Image 1: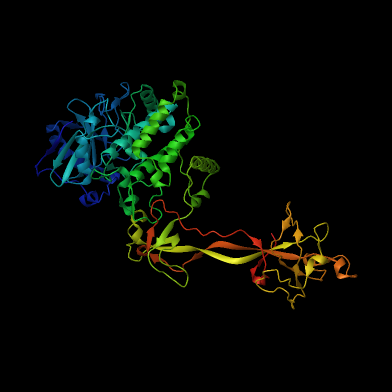
Image 2: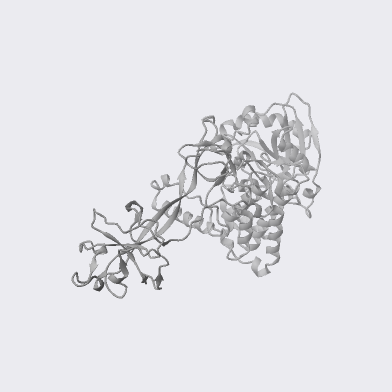
Length: 616
């Protein structure tokens, strides 16, 4: 571990494409490899004077651009350095993992240990974080290594540049090659320990993804030789020396200490940065702010969910770990330290047989979008179907259901006539970039205020009436003696139903002394006798007289219909889009006001034709 050094040699060149570098739009095209080679060639003597020797560079064949060549000999050192692998009987070849780029270089220190050099802006948040990590002694001893890759030197250069020198690890994680529970849990606990350490230093990573996790092994084998690399990594894992870490802090922020980890907040627009493959939904409901530490935990939980769902049958307690890391209730989500402690308890509860149990991890395949499916071969269709099935199986490990809607509260009266008034809970139905948003800005860079929102509110509709029909025969037939043209007065009728329908010839009666089993198994006793419709048109069989039309009225049995009455909860949309200034997210823990309606009851009023639904 060494300190930060400054150099004032103004003859040293600036980084190529400086404007893109400052905006973190890194130039990775092979077209820029030659100018990157010139940049590092200028710094090679300077680095030698400071104890570091860059790897050799050679021109590759496809494409014919400069590549780094791995060393013939390197020292495998303890933490925080990595192990080096090279097959002695195979000649060295250009290291085809990466052509030469201006922002990274690779070499060795004076003791023969492999190192990587990253170019960053001086006086940036990233540099301040690296300076802080450089002072964390726990990161430089094998017994206390906290699974975060630290710098070993920081050089401050002209042109507002700094070189950050780090031990050289690699991203050869190869999850498909993990063969047992022990190897999976080693990865889980290592990465959780790393995140817990960062958060204990109040560093929010803000770009948790597989591309920012590494293993302490660097191999000279060409990365295209998958089988050879897999066997190298399997041997490394089986030796118990494999360790994993978190690195790359170009999007990270270090907050001042002094508050509980749950109380930190950042503007929600900052959550849209970085790789979004594993982002939780913490800012997708229009929030002004979010907790970046809880966001990190949610991202890592989603990494575990997509990669290790197949391990849950062997390690059941992985399911609650992942659930508590990814729950949509942010206040219920594990902190990184809680998740790490939970993972340690899982491991302590496993026997040697449990840890040595074999696992087979399915490859993580992103299902192709629908517009691509029609161009796939039969074999590709089969792989896509397998990917869909695996994604569905992964989703089933959720124990916490997602929120039903995206609720917010109105801060002002939007349209009183339509019922959209201040304080009402509404649902975000859709959104559209505001007219003030530049077209060049990508969606992931937009904050809540850069959108216009379509909203809808709950609305109670009704009353509605559902027709219930009596049978035409059998013991449940309605006899004439149960019908009355008179209103007995003991009925609380909203309207008098004793009317003649001139259009259909249907007469309205009242049921009296009504007991009817309906179509259910239990007897229905009407607390208030409902009105019914009666017709003598035999062609309209659902309202037809049953039995003879001769004889006294009391001897007839009738087929009648009557109604059940109910209210319906539906949505009412606001016709235009409104600005975010009129909205605010619901406070954490506040539940949306979803109206409830009573259950259906027997109608005591006669419905208008527009209110009647068809029989169930």
